[in-house]
Length: 186
Length: 410
Image (cartoon, rainbow over the protein chains, first blue to last red):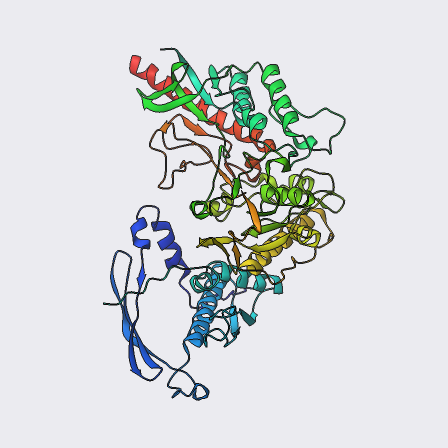
């Protein structure tokens, strides 16, 4: 009798990622990346963000196409609702980053994923952005991420996947830790 | 210029273990010590510190504990006395008050300069310790003037601190012990917690280190682990050398210590803490669960499990100028001091590149680093196996050198 084991495939090329890590000690400069976005005001609170190029692996790089994101505010803010609000884009980025991490870590740990769904919610007190209470910050007062994951793994292994994904997530780090921001006008 | 076969730099437990193994093979050597044997145990430990491993585990080549308290934990003066006796009974050739100022490769061997003269040696063993100096993060320079800043190397007892609140940065062995001690002395303590290794003092009725020793976890070799780089960076276990007493984050927070996230920045005098506290606690809980599963798989049947680390809502900022905090304790780890090593074996961050303590420069060895050859390499009990294997390698290198010289002579 022969048993055939289907190899785990979450669509992540872990070998390529590990190959980059192995190359780092000899060529640490390839790790220097710069991410970019160009944002143009359209009208009202509506603007469009284009993402096209970045720098990394020692050279200028390009997405295979230009991605555009409309950013606006909802009708309830007396706006035109031409796109998600900036804070929702932040949530989308966090969920996208963590979920990519879940897939990559699962691949490396030979865990086959069947479905992964993250529900994100962020609490905010409008007193902050409206300048109505100096003790309230502009940003989120808290973020919760709730995962539903169906995979060939124990509950503990799935918890470990999600924990490891947070540990290696850029957006999770950006949100949980301070980042210096310089805004110039030319 | 006097010469010897091997110079060992440092007369701590690793240097002395190495000396013992070399002597057993009649390999001529000296041990250079900047002060006296076990110097760091005499001068760089706080008063209440005890070894994290129990007395029965305090084993070195040719030495084991024979006292009447095998389950106790040695104090720093007791460790210093034990190592002094060990050096005496081993008749280790230690040159005390001899500070190494440089080690360079020369003529197929090494030239070791000290403040007491220069030695030539075929081989050198770096045994000056992984914890020679405190590793304080660069952001410490942003602490507002007027606060008292301490490290575990300089701290002796609570009398060193002014009254008022204390921010302990780091929640590994040193940080949790100092947070516990200062809280008990009446200081309001805030503990900044990054990645940590949660550990109960006892499990299934025995010291946790008994289980890790008996089940072979501590014997896991450096060439068997998946990610050695990471394994070598794992922080020290949250343990205190006190029978039956677990000082984990739950114990600290229920006693009244305030937990906050990793110290991520200081801006305009305000300390900023990471929002990652729930995840670092989840990681540590999961890791502990896996470790206990490993122990259970070896022991059979399942032991007790510990409550998940409780994380309450924590402040993300703390104004260091408000007077609430008067002292910061940097329990942020330690690093070696190899500023005198002028041999090209260092990587870009100044760490020695080595394969289980064997460097790429023939005849240059390193001992006493975390996970050097085994998980237990960072414990006193790890020195025996590491020293024995490095001595075997070193002896093989000397044999090869002698063989080459004979062949070239004939």
